[in-house]
Length: 311
Image 1 (spheres, rainbow, N blue to C red):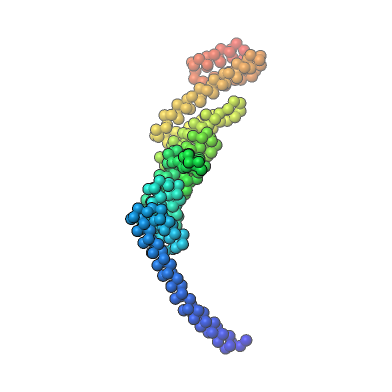
Image 2 (image 1 turned 180 degrees about the vertical axis):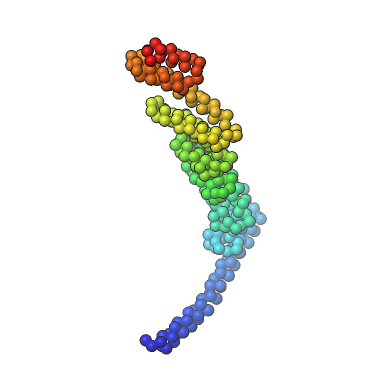
C-alpha cells in the first residue's frame, strides 16, 4: 500500500474513533447521573426510615446503596449509617462486617476513625466472651475462639501502624492461651514482640512466652529444652525491657529456674549413686556444684558425696 492511501486510512480510523467517543461519553455520563439519582433516592428513603424509627428498613436501603451503587457519593455515608444502626441494635457481628466495608472501601470517609474504634471494640468484646450470638434453638453462646481471633486479625490488618494492631495481636495470644492452645498462643505473642517491639504489649507478650514454656515443660529431654528456652525468653525480656513492670517477675522466674536446674542435677546424681554408677554420679554432683551457690544445702551435699566417692 502506498503512503498516501495508508495516511487516508489512518485519518478515517481516527475520525471513527472520535465519533464513537462522542457518542459513548454522553451515554456514560447519563448512566452515572442515573446511578447517582438512584443512590440518592435510596439514601433519602433510608434517612426517612431511620428518623421514623424503622431501623430494619433503613439498614436495608443503606445496604442497597453500598452494594448496587458502591461508587456513588452517598455510599460511604450509607455504609457508616448501616454499621451504626446495626451496632445500636445489638447486632454486633453484622456491625463488625459493616464497619469493615467502610474501612476497606471508603478510607477517605470522615467516619473512618470512628469505624476503626468501634470495630476494635466489637472484636475485643468477642474475645473477652462478652459478645454472644443466638443458636438455632435460641440459646446464646460465646463466640468461638477461631471467629474471635479472625476478627482481631482484621482489626490488626486494617490499621497495622496504630496501637490497635498490637493490642489485637496480643489478644489473639491471650485467647489461645486461655483455651490452652499453647503453640498458637506462643506464636501470637512472638509476633507481638517481633512486629511491635515498642508497643506497651510487647514486654507482657515476652513474659508470657517464657511463662508458657515453663508451664508446658514435660519430663525428660523435652523438659530440659523447654526450660532452657524459657530461661532465654526471660533473659530477652530483661535485655529488651529492663524497666518494664514484668522485669522483677522475669528475675524471679530465672532464679526459680536456676534452683530447679540445681535440684534436677542433684536428683540425677543421686539416681546414679543408688545404681552404683559412680562416675556418672560424680559428674552430676559436679554439675550441682557448678550451678549452685557455694554454701547452699545442695552445694554442700554434692561436695560431700564427691569426697566420699573419691571424685
